[in-house]
Length: 150
Image 1 (cartoon, rainbow, N blue to C red):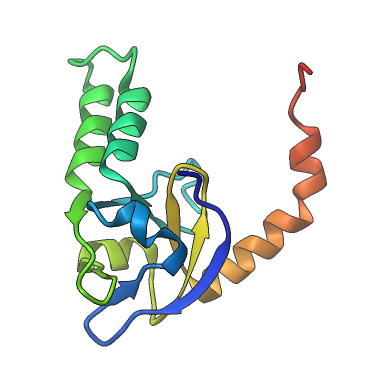
Image 2 (cartoon, rainbow, N blue to C red; image 1 turned 90 degrees about the vertical axis):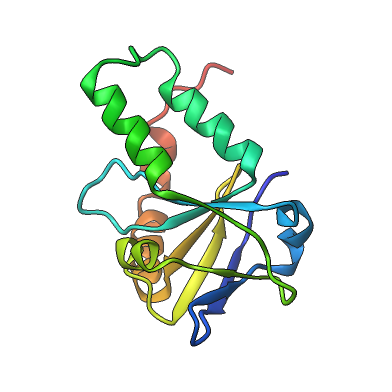
């Protein structure tokens, strides 16, 4: 499943997020909610919604080739697994967003869910609006910075 698109939602009073209808089937067997590891410490934070298999593939690829007893590899593994939650959609297709996750991403009531290819990302709406405007302004620069082999 490829996740794409942008969807505006609101968390309810119990901090539940309604999953976009388009993706409910793909996530009906369970969801892994994880902190999104961004490489820019000052950047806008978000959460990621994965299928269980998708998150395992992501973590495996991330840790592949690292010495498992090297302290940085242990720290990364601990962060990736300790800050991921196995969740299920309720009867109204909602997910409860844990407090630690909401705090990490700075989520208010209004959120945006965006496709990110292999997962969905959940952002605070105000923060995402600023982030998106900045990224769109840099789109030509970002695209041109990659060397294409085709």
